Image 1 (tube, helix red, strand yellow):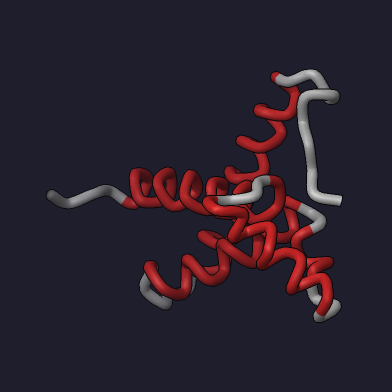
Image 2 (spheres, one colour):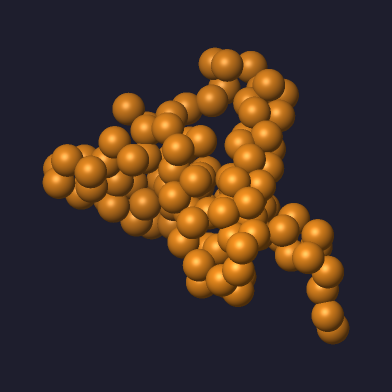
Length: 105
């Protein structure tokens, strides 16, 4: 089954959102992600995980280089996927009371 470019961009945006949210806000299965975050902070590179929107750009870059063909639109795809991921996160946060959201500190 062949997918259109629009469908692929939507699916990749959802994937980038999920991975970014997992690494920025959740503990993950068996607290694996929390242990990884702690290790990254000990190595002084954990600051990458403090900003969801910044981290989603990095995840988008990796996903685009792995999945999409290298062409003149690649930078636009990276920005679009990271942007949709950020919009999803903003919509979710605005749907919750700010006291219900727990972030890694």
